[in-house]
Length: 306
Image (cartoon, rainbow, N blue to C red):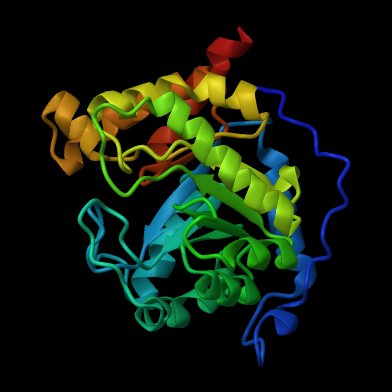
C-alpha cells in the first residue's frame, strides 16, 4: 500500500551532531553512520506501509505493562519479540504518562534507562525512539543512538527540547496534550492551536518538517467524546498540516469505556481504531501487540490493492 506523504521542504537539514558532541564522554554509542541509517530507514517507511511502533515500557507503573520489562534480559527479549512480530521501530519509555501518574525526576528516569539503552541499541537492529518530555533525557538517549524523540508535550514542556532535537538531527513526534479535561472544549480547534505552537517552536529551532510527526494525543486531557473526535480528525489533521500522523491508542481506557473491557481485553478495540485511522491517512501506530497489527495491516493492504 502506498500513501503519499508531504515531500521534504526546501529547508536545509541540520547537521547531525556526533554522540560525543552531545554528551560528555559520549558513552557506548552506535556509530554515527548507523544512527543515520536507522533514522532514514524509519522515515523511509512512512507513506510506504503502515509503520508499527512497538512499545517498550521500562517503568514500574505504566497502565498496561508496568514492571514487566525493567531488567535488561526482559527488555531485550521484549524488544526482539516486537521486531520479530513486525515492529519497525521500538519506543522506549521510563516514565509513565497515564492519567494520574506521579512525575519522575530526571535522575530517576535516567537510572531506569541507562543500563538498558546501550545494550538494546547494540543488540536489536532497529530504529529506537525515546518517550520523554525532558530535553536532558532526550539528549543522553540520542547520544547512545536513539534517532526519534517522542514528546507527549509537543516541545512545549521543556524549553530546551526543540534545540536538542534540531542539533542532533533526530526526528520528533509532537503530541497534543492538556493539563485538564474540559468537557466544553472544541477539540478540533484546540488541536489546531496546539500544533501551530509546537510547529512554531520546531521552526525556530531549525527542525525540518521532514523530521516531524503529529500525534492527536488520545487519552491525554480529553474525555471519551473528545478522544473519538480526535481520532475522526485524522484525515483533517493530515490535510491541514501536511505531516504524518501517529496514532497511539493501544489498550487505552477509551476501549474500557466503550466496550467494558479490561486492559487485557482491549486489543479488538485497538485494532478497530487503528484500521479506521489508517483508512483516514494515519501513518504510524504505537502499539503493544505488533504481530496482531502486522496481520491486520496485511489484510487491509490486500483489500486496498484488490
